[in-house]
Image 1 (cartoon, rainbow, N blue to C red):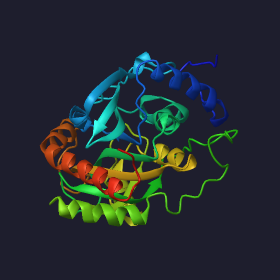
Image 2 (image 1 turned 90 degrees about the vertical axis):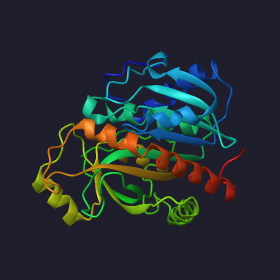
Image 3 (image 1 turned 90 degrees about the horizontal axis):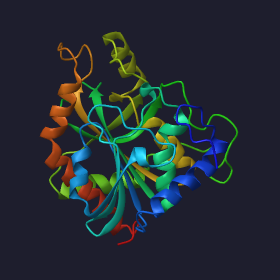
Image 4 (image 1 turned 60 degrees about the vertical axis):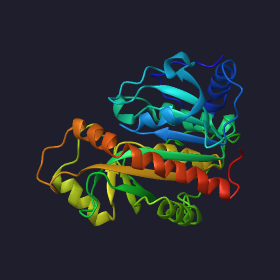
Length: 292
């Protein structure tokens, strides 16, 4: 039995044994094989209510996983079907800013892949660095900047999970982005596109940092997603990313930032966000990326 203490560093080479334990615990409660894994970011967890024939597993009941502590994160795995597609959704991810090791932060996505997911949809709440992206904007992630100073693949590699040096050139697939833009248009959903910058947090950025991010090419900034996309690509999953712009970043609007604004904006765009995720599943089905 591996050491499942969630407070200790988890190098990649230790992941297979930990994922074996997680998979066994999940299989004891559901036999559904998901073809899509969805991570629901801050304020976006209500989308899980749309999942049919759902089985919910609190994350702290799984081996080596702690309680979710971030505000607006319920901390549950939800298994079921959306538009006939078998899915697993994570309501409430783990974050680096909570003090968790990167090896724990990425375990839900590693588990998705082990359980059968070929596509991973990563969502987040983010601050708008691009002045044109106001609160309520939905942004398709075209690329990212890893400014956390952390790689979840640092340490002895787990060859059973993926290559030592994964290529991130097309980690946010151009082909998938094109099909999703078309699907969003068909559903009447306005979808922007841009670069997501990942920082550790939990403090918000300074106005000077936001100006720096814009100079570097970022359109949105947040405190998640980057470790997860790296490991998803490492394991061969196709990745789609959606940022819900919940506020303009520091120094743009002149207003003080708060997490209340994040959750309020996410609630306001819930219907549009749900329509977009439905469009994503429809596009994946049309391209035979997922099984029904």
